[in-house]
Image (cartoon, rainbow, N blue to C red; front, side, top):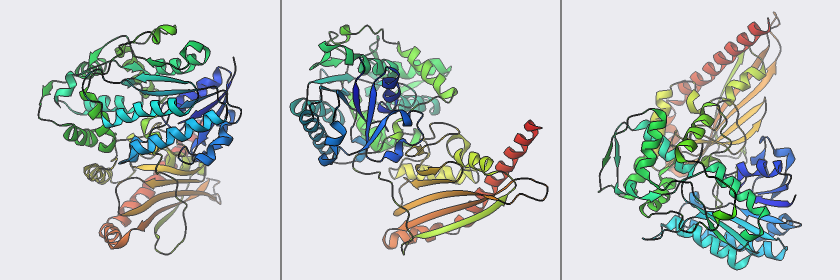
Length: 493
């Protein structure tokens, strides 16, 4: 039966995948987002209703709830830093109350499995408390609880993938012996959707998991086997969760601030102990190795729909408006190239990730390592797709703040800096060359808004590096655009 669905978390990992699948099933989907621009460019943008709202601003919720049959709550503030549990609690209470007052039939929520022994991590306690808060204040709740979600782009899987890929001898703490029950992301989505047609799931807590209960060590070994890698594992019991998260932050795309709560949760066994909820569905969960193979195929085919880095914390991450106010430093480079604006912009959109930053990549890598050491994301977040970007996506230690296809790309810095910084590319058509060759101008601008004297000192300390670095970037950008234009002309001939 087609329903009107309110979906939160659509800029995140699960919500961004759930939206198009709900549409395929004939539902009318309304997306609640803090910044509607962050859904610009998604393939299903014009098929959903987008409503601006924030679960921490209760006055924005009634309009989003009007006429809704069911609502998915897929929000948590783990990446918001200290105090995320209190923000999660307030957000869930606001959402539950608004849903109940609007007459929403039910709420569906995805949380984590409670450990059967040992103490739950701060992060997991918050996820469990979110379910309790929604249940106490809102309509009938279907609370799904899952352990590790295996899929291209998930935070847990990225930890496993990059640690296995990049560390030839894996030095691991004792938590790798902890058992868990991983589940493929596709199966999670099926449970979330199928529950709409199963009245027996209303008001229930449903634990979901894959067909195997395995240790984290077995997950590392399983990934290595799929990739044909040999990875000896050496256990070092003295490694604490804090040290492990710092190491993960340096080696993987997941920052230490995100890795820490995840790793703290790995100390306790989380497996399905009540299968009665899963028995209500006709789903045959995918085995771990098959889920890994499918995830790797998605990476190879550039078909990663969403990643963990696509979401922003509820307490921050708002897009800043560029201004010309006093104190904003701008360093601008301009170049005219013999290539069409389309060819130039195709190169602009592909920067970062495996492509790199066009010039002096070793310097960028050093900057990424330094950023990791002080708790920033570093360069290892990469990109979702090699060629396509959309507002809100992460590109290494930048965030796409604005994109106008064929004309403008603005990136906001998320590396640790004493102030705020942006890198902007503007492309405009120029008069064709005398022989008819198309031409375009590129304006590349680094903006920096320093914070205090230390911010100014930081900028001027790097100033000697900036001119040759940015000059080299724009020249290489132009060279690649002209090469792309020449290749297109050859194919056209």
